[in-house]
Image (cartoon, rainbow, N blue to C red):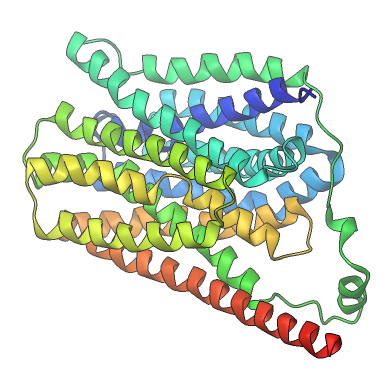
Length: 405
């Protein structure tokens, strides 16, 4: 039977095509904005940290709105905030004003996340993991296309604002489209917490499990990877490896190609029943290895190949896989869980641009040392969850055998 919500899913995915562009559009126009706002490259890059503030501010209510008023309301708010961001950043005369509009982008992202991921889990109830992975495909599609568009505008001498105009046009059309779509009934909201969990909550003993803490923290890891690849790989190419500006921008596209291929591979593995945890363990370990190679052996060839593999292993759906594991290990509402995950992402989105901008002033290549440490941290988090899962299964098997005998 054909899924009657496929058009709804398409609109949800299209939002993330724009989101992928929005994540890197400031960094790819960084020199233009630094001059326009009367600040340094590091100062203009710090504006990106405002995205994280917006995400953190919004999570206090975005998940509640998603669970109580519906996924559609959350998504329409997200699109609307993104529209204001795209228009506002384009015409911001100073970095301070741009920072305000960046906060709105973070709020937009939070509303989209807390509406979209639960909605996709409800549209594709039996394939929620692969469905969430496709979000990453659209994000990377936007990040692959935007450097090409900006490179074309620069070569032709066209106004840089046309790239923003593209975002505004897509968002406007999708806002109209999504307002006409029907959404599936919400499932497993915060009202669906088990009776035992509700009893504990009333007694004030409803604590976070180790698995929940680990996987909520993983949001920080996944967002850090996106920040390093999307915001700094181009500058690494031009300033460390001495590539041209267009060649440096293309490193972002190479990373996006790697991520797109990874999304397809991960989607296939998910459909064949491969669990998310072992995939994440492999990807985070390889992210650490590739990051160290980029730091140790800077050259045009290493930068090009490294960007591809960094995109494959660090940006091919880790955030979505982590969220899927979190939902699988918790009985809380999907919107609330996504909000908690978003807080972790928001902390990274706020702090990492500032930290990375400081590293940039010292030695940009050291950014990849930090990326490697973050990757190993993410590896450890998921390893803890995997070990506890195996221990729990072993205990269950023992109880089954004892009861059988």
